Length: 345
Ligand code: MRU
Image (cartoon, rainbow, N blue to C red; front, side, top):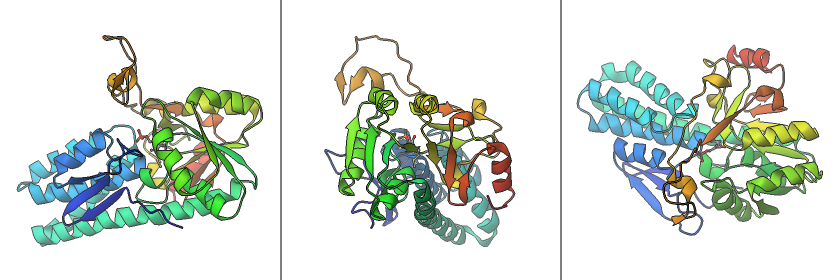
């Protein structure tokens, strides 16, 4: 069963994005006709979630080639797009994939290169949906019937080109008639859990409750959670996972109470070049995300703020990493290397 909404579409030479800054109270679309508008949409989180920003950037590269007459300008535009958000590797992964197609086909002339880039952007978007469905079927194996699942941030159709990763696994289990129950962390400060995951869970009619982030520890201690399933923005070669702030704390609590903890990612989220999580650049966002809630000031004027958007969960706290190629279990370093070499898991 698919969603009635699409986070990201390309229509009449424009990238059309469901505005995730204002969901669920306002359902509005933003149109991006230039790479600058795509960059802004990613940076301002009109579109967000690692796979979704990768797909959006792919269309941004196509628009950049349309706009730029010289190759230097085109490459500068791609660098600019790649800097919109630094943590999720899918952004650079998609841009590099587009640039490699450009390098292969530019000899055929500009109209040819434009056609090839547009079809590659479509391919990235369509592959992401197929990948998510495969991930979900694989991930469903670790979801017991009657499981109560805790999830964090938003990893559904909104965070991807469609269907979702961790939330895709949850939906697959539900549509497979497993009687699951989901607790969704609200996910301060941007409330992706409250605004987006709660909305997607309701749309899918999955029984669920929204909790404030700090309630998770009590639920886990009291034996109310069977497993935690969430996403990932960049996985290092040793299995350390950068994901939405709060993931690390959840992993520590799960480890203390012996609760299975899974990260769900497409292989494009694995950064084989990064040896461990310490090399992952963590995005810090503006103070107003913390001092203000939906535009209303809650902290004293002038308060100093530390606002990292992500944190790194050490691989020792992770039960498994679910991908379209299978579930990666410890020893993560060895098994991620096998994945890189194309071997089966
Ligand atoms: O800041 P966001 O909303 O882009 O962060 C999103 C997350 O952290 C998700 O868990 C991750 O990108 C995986 S989305 C399938």
